[in-house]
Image (cartoon, rainbow, N blue to C red; front, side, top):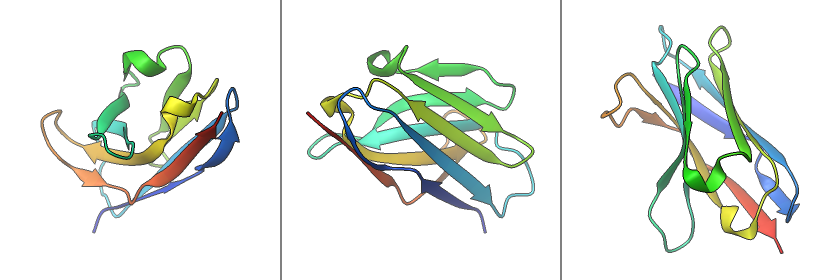
Length: 117
């Protein structure tokens, strides 16, 4: 059974940094796409960043230049380094693993990130 477990969320002041990590277990293969989503209160879940198995990355405009996604295929982990955090980054962040872009894949339980002003 595939499981994703996120860690690293917390409370930080505006301008601070956090690093989220996601560990994948139970998979006998490396997922082609690893993604971070976030959902703020009262808003829809949105894609923050993705990384392919080969290391190609893509970011939402709102986080470009501030967030960096990376992965370790050997350890089956994905991370999200978040710098220059803003109050509008406050959300629950979810890790997602899929084989194909259109698939729903597997989800972690989410980790709360709160940025105080």
